[in-house]
Image 1 (cartoon, rainbow, N blue to C red):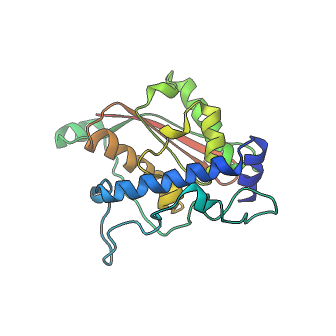
Image 2 (image 1 turned 30 degrees about the vertical axis):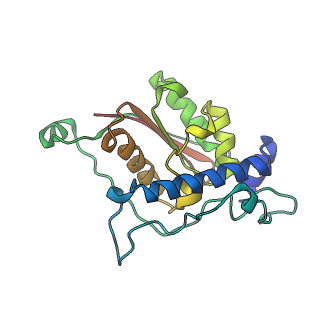
Length: 227
């Protein structure tokens, strides 16, 4: 949290922009819940059929009431940071022959990278990972129909999106971790599930980009396409 606060300050991302982004994430998630977007992604357990964290009625004005939590005068609050939620996610991987035999929609992995970075700046790990992915695939920000970069902190993900050339309104358009929560170790699979829903289930087709910062300054990114 402190590292995210310092990163936001370093990158000139103020409290108002962070709160506006976080409020939008909640609004998008609530809209998606009401529209049944997540229904086919969720396996009910113990009667739980929907994510519990998204808050209805969250606005930038409401978020402005929250106090900084990591340092005096900071900009990271409990409301513009993700929740550390319980959760699990499962994805199945197969070879091309099996996929063809099954005759169902899926995602083809175009490339996957993991990079090391600066431990003191763990949240920025998304940036070198995505840049490496751009270099290896020859793709750029405009070549992806769906972008799901994990929203650990509003300030952190805004800094990353600015650096990789993706407008923040294109990220997590159906709600991200600021609203839905960040179940560590499961989140990467969650991001791919979100891409699968949008590219395959909803029939958009095209390519998707997912990326996540990892403790210790690492970052991972993956490019996929509907198949």
